[in-house]
Length: 346
Image (tube, rainbow, N blue to C red; front, top):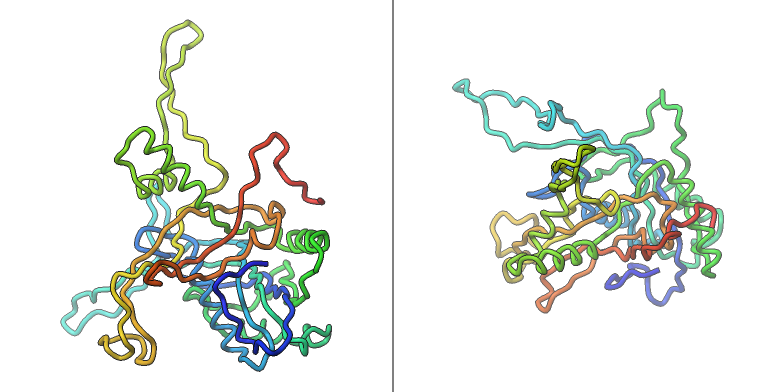
């Protein structure tokens, strides 16, 4: 299990053991669907890392559990939009008019209802590794999560009319041997079906950039990102049954269900001392102006994960000036072979 650049809140003098905390099928209402200035849809992965940090703080250092990374599996996605062909519009609230009767200006807000399962890579102190202690801590974590906000949305209790069982939160020790971990991952994958896990495919972005630059030297990473973020149709010359030339439009093949995603922030300014920037969120945290970072992600079935590292996202500070705050995922696509599709039961 890898989580570079992260520090555990569990005291270093206390022996710790890796474990997996699973919060199954959380129902989130009115989460933020505008994940960045250029994308909309599923919330940004930074929102789930923020939820992980908030949950750790709510449980407190006395819980004996420190969070390192989070995996996200989506079971249901219901964007609050109106549809008319290819045009979509968000459902917006109607604010009260001003004193003179004019309409008040509003900031457009996109909302989405979600059902997600969250899998956390955690460290447990030796006092919490017993079966009873782990069950109590898992129930406590689920209870704490039920009163929190996730991506701006509210975590809701299961619907009384729902026929689907949400399941109980679990906290289990990570197996030691690779074979036992593989079996543990298969069991978790079956529990998360039907659903799709979000992984990073920055390798696709690099390859597409190289391909565009081979045809046009002026192409850059932004051109590659935009090319991957849309459906491209190309004219193909063919001949019909009479031997006459004809043209058909065919879409480019895509490597799975790929999507453009924001993955963090890049600093635009130096780090300002606490309290020196007017209207900052608080006066005790250093402040820096930033802009969004984008990459390419992919939704894959949990049964196609080959290791827990493929699932987990973690935060990392990069750059010579430590001004790049990035969400990373270590997913590596399998080699393209005729029998590369992994078996669900192996």
